[in-house]
Amino acid sequence: MYAMLPIVRADGTITIHLANDGPDNLVVTLYDRNARHRQLVLSGQIIYGNASISTSITADSSAQGHLTWRAMSTDRDMPRCGHRDVLHIDDGATVHVKADSACPHHHR
Image (spheres, rainbow, N blue to C red):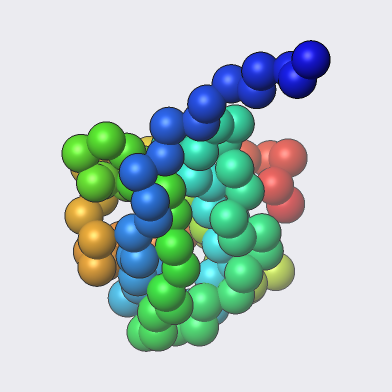
């Protein structure tokens, strides 16, 4: 007898662009919230100032993505941090990442 595995509802993937509009280099971590268990997509990815990268995340039943990102500037003397939960992301969308707040003490 075969074990029944749960069916994972994934309606494909979408491509998104992560843009760093600021001059400082950022270290970015990205989680796909539509994946079954909050899947790590990027870990410690450097996005240079005024640059962008592309990646794919899981689409939900309405063909939209859901992600959480965290970013920290690479400036060791005065690090800045940022984070956001982003819903309803369309295929080809640009998500802007930034580090414009003081970092929590445990991130330094």
